[in-house]
Amino acid sequence: MLSLCSVCELREFELFEGVEQEELDQLGKGSQPSVVPKRNFIFTPDEPSNAVYLLKKGRVRISRLSDTGKHFTLVILEPGAIFGESAIFGDEPRKYYAEALDDAYICAINKHEFEKIISRNPMISLRLAHIVEQRLEEVQEQIENLVFYDVQTRLARLLLKLADLHGQRVDGGVKIGIRLTHEDMASLIGSTRETTSKILNEFKTAGHIDVEKRHIVLLDQKALADMH
Image (tube, rainbow, N blue to C red; front, side, top):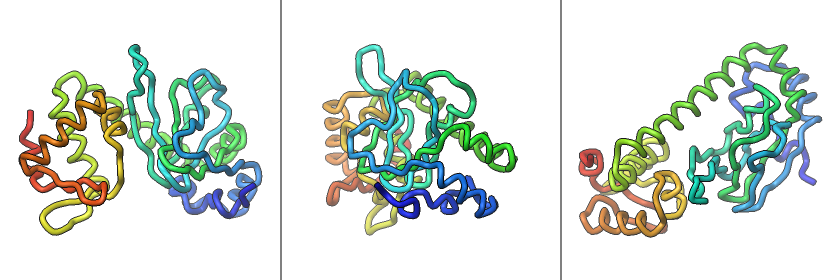
């Protein structure tokens, strides 16, 4: 069993900024820290929405299952994120999959305990509403990409977005600071791993990207941005 201090240091999460330490300690006592092994699910559709999750370390993928049985990624969460927040807004079962892309250090907080601290700290409600709004915008962007762009353009737009979020300036270009498998990228653009790999190879041959130690480096962002 992990100690609370190893995972549930709630003061480190922006969501709880300004909350009295006594309240955070009380909330932490009711939390359940755990490590979810890579490629294991944290929750799946139809499970009860009885907890809110905080991500301390690792990455978590939120996805839905398509009619063809493939996972379509809605968002990949980084440390510091909150997820499963829909539990706060009702008692309906989960609708999404939450999967650990790495060994994920998470903290599960009972929804009723979470509701108590929200009721005493309206600022948390505002921050939570902002998080929900951002998630909706991300989903809307995903849908628009699927409707209006071909696979090549969707992949180019994804690489540019990842460079914007996780880019590190290096000689000759911008390195994407996180590692995603071709399958991960395929699920983010509604494609297959084979097609995604083929287009990445085409981008590399054209001199748009390079790969260094499993990290993608964007060499020609303008060329990627001009695809349509």
